[in-house]
Amino acid sequence: MGYFNENSQIMDHFLHPRNVGKINNPDGIGKIGNPMCGDIMELQIKVKEGIITEAKFQTYGCAAAIASTSSLTELVKGKTIKEALEISHRKIREVLGEMPSHKYHCTVLAEQALKAAIEDYQKKND
Ligand SMILES: [Zn+2]
Image 1 (cartoon, protein in one colour):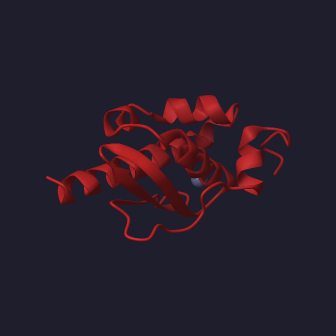
Image 2 (image 1 turned 45 degrees about the horizontal axis):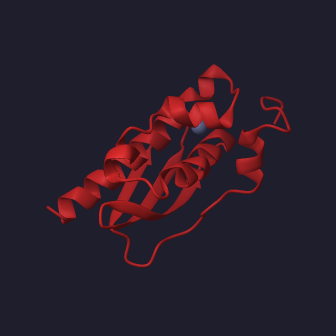
């Protein structure tokens, strides 16, 4: 764990991940894997009248990947689909604070999982 400051948001989310698990009858599911470092993320969202009311995740991967998806579930809650689509990996990095640059891809993965979950939702509701 030498990479991360113990008091950082990243460690906080890693040690106390928010919204872990699955949703009953999710409206959208996004599954993304990164063959390079082996991170696998599944993000599920519940959407009511165009607003994301619930988000849960399961991530098998490094601390940065877990922290990225955990913070993402907090970021998307209460957002409209349009607002959620504007959440970028940069925003996730902003929330989590400093991290080594070789871990940036984990935040990109979280953004892709969100986009995939929204796409899945839109496909089912078009
Ligand atoms: Zn990773």
